[in-house]
Image 1: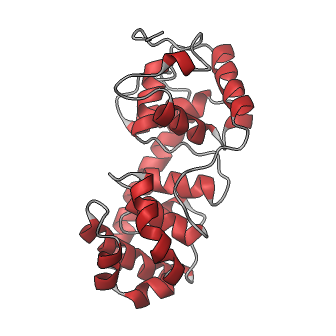
Image 2: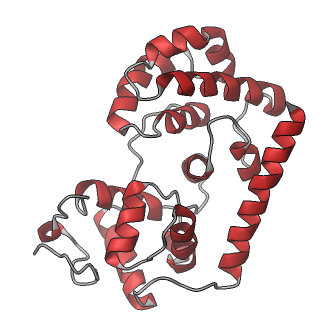
Image 3: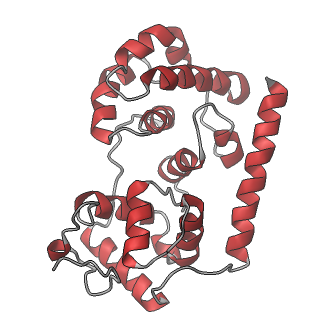
Amino acid sequence: MKSLCRSTTSARRATTKSAASARKGGGARRSKLKGEAVAEIFRRFAVENPEPKGELESVNSYTLLVAVVLSAQATDAGVNKATRALFKIANTPEKMVSLGEAKLREMIKTIGLYRNKARNVILLSQMLIEAHGGKVPHDRDALEALPGVGRKTANVVLNVAFGEPTMAVDTHVFRVANRIGLSNGKTPLAVEEDLLGLIPPDAGVHAHHWLILHGRYVCKARRPECERCIIYDLCLFKGKTA
């Protein structure tokens, strides 16, 4: 188990270093928008919503981590419905392990893939206790070494729990970035690299929430509501509806 964790951590560390190297080297920027337009986009987001918040409910960094793990291929609303009762009785790794996998499955069975997620939550809770004193680590490699935790989950935790200017690329961020011209990356990592290289430093902490909320409520997948869009004149999407 220890050798497997070391191997997995090393592979993830190499991926992280590769992404950082691409950003430092400038890489081949895939953005079609110029710097002034990018700055104006995030300035408008900031004016409209100065303190954007994620919609997953949590009471501490541990429950945030669990909520994000549970949210994979599920809606925030669906996760919140299940975790409100769960987090009242299991808001630490120790309490979650005591709850047990069978009881946890029963409490989250309305969430997709709940069996695998329950197993991962118990395993990551055990690892937090054994390797991190029951605390959520402020370290990407350590986070990504936890069962069920990938790059996107680590980015959310680093951003929300620790205030890091990370970019968690979910389906909304991926769509919005490609649609409005911030990137034409074909993978989440490519889009992440582009955005990290483009976003003004003063917008770094809130940027991924602005893009997620914009994609969820305005720049929707089936039909973007361009008539309500505050960046309509800056957007390069050819399929504008207004």
